[in-house]
Amino acid sequence: MNSEKVLMVLAGRPPRADLLNWRLEEADLSIAVDGGWECFRAAELVPNAWIGDGDSCDEFQSLSSDYENMLVIPSIDQDSTDFEKAAIWVNQNTNCSDLVVLGGMGERSDHFLSNLIIAANFNSRWTVTFDDTDEWIRRVTPETPLSLKGRNGSTLSILPIEECKLSTNGLKWELSDEKLSIRDSKVSQSNECISDNIEVKCQSGCAFVFLVK
Image (tube, rainbow, N blue to C red; front, top):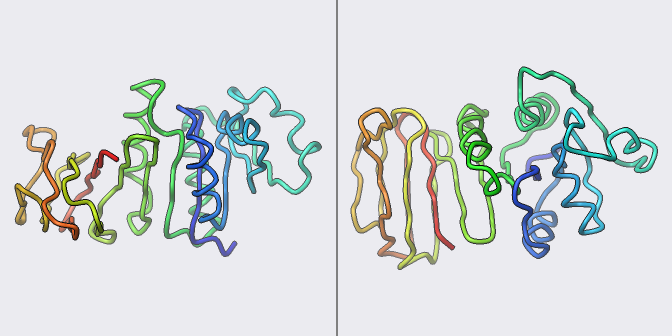
């Protein structure tokens, strides 16, 4: 399936209608991940696919018959989350290079942390972005450096999921081949963008960049 830009909507805090519509227009493939279906239904939109075990989607049993043009992929595997199931399917069936996740933040902190840990293990060549009304999060790996434009004055934090080695450009407190690690409590918290051209490069490992909108 020729789908480089993939949008997943999870069952967390629903995105605003304008954010959903914008991300939907940008996507080659849209996926409702189990209860993420409610977000599409509320907006009177239909994604290209639905993936999950149905425990958070009351309409699960009737989706195939009610929406003939939507691919319905049920999975009752309880050893993985619906987010993981969707990512595995995308990895096996598309040529995804850019994954955007809505509904992955808010509601429950354990779900949010779980989503970050899961996303840290996705295909390292994917650009992975979590988007929400007030915050934007981007995974950085050696294959997916981050470049931001027009963010002078914004607050930015960099948190490692695993030990990583990072360099930055355009921040108040720059990192140069700096090792960040949760184990050593080494993170870059509440850094400040002092340029309209920001770069975050990861030499090894994986980290997430948090940007306040």
